[in-house]
Length: 349
Image 1 (cartoon, rainbow, N blue to C red):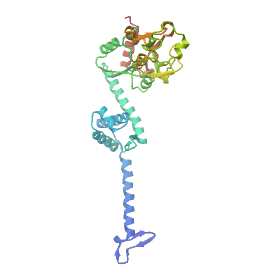
Image 2 (image 1 turned 120 degrees about the vertical axis):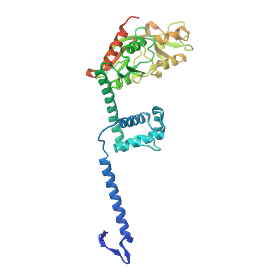
Image 3 (image 1 turned 180 degrees about the vertical axis):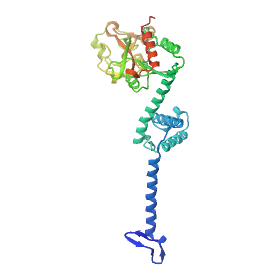
Image 4 (image 1 turned 90 degrees about the vertical axis):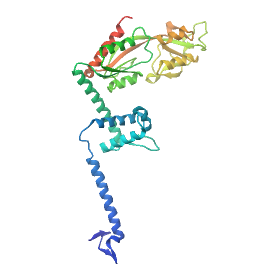
């Protein structure tokens, strides 16, 4: 046996056989390393998906839940399984795909470049699966599946739009559909409808986005209020607009808080909230003025805990609209819900 090391051909080394020669050990180690790397690269190139099965879809849903939660431990509650089970499932997915999807350590959870790509592709795939199931079921005549609707908060009690009646009619017309209701801010609603993660949204949309269709529904009166303990609460004389604008104001956080509160021009938005409950709490604290929908302010005014401030001058109306995807992307279920929502807004009390 002849071994080439360091430019020399050697058979042995003095009285030592070749397998005891130091150069031989270096040669063998180098060869094993190269072969191992070639095997790893070969294995990676040949670990390719030939087809998807139901278990693969489940593993992808686990992966997306981990991404949405921001880590394995946080995903336990959403998935209702232990962290060790999630870890095993993630390892199985990475083995199945032949890709490293994420890193865990002291620095926290982070997606790899491949993980970011798989995250995007998996979401598209699962959305396509849901749409396929929905469209196939529609071919059979009965509309089934899940219908996702998002609205502004505190719509209950408004006389010009009965949300409870709308839900009842949806249940009557679409008995086989599972209804998911959420409260969201307008920007999130528009984004999710564009991404086809929401079917319908109801909110105020001052800036219409391309790719979406907007239907006007109703106008909601917004009343400027102060709470007990505020300087204006017990004041007998009417304040001027300049005096009103000088008080701290609780504003909507939609669109970064840049929406104009009707005729009011507050000097300082001391509190921003995306919910009417947050605005209400700020007003009741006695430290802030704020606009509330009439149905939200009414109980507190009746209880003597709030007082309208120049209602004829400082109130304004907010236009609520229904947003849907534009064009041919509207499904039969969305068309039915659109009809129900529009009729709910136009029907008499």
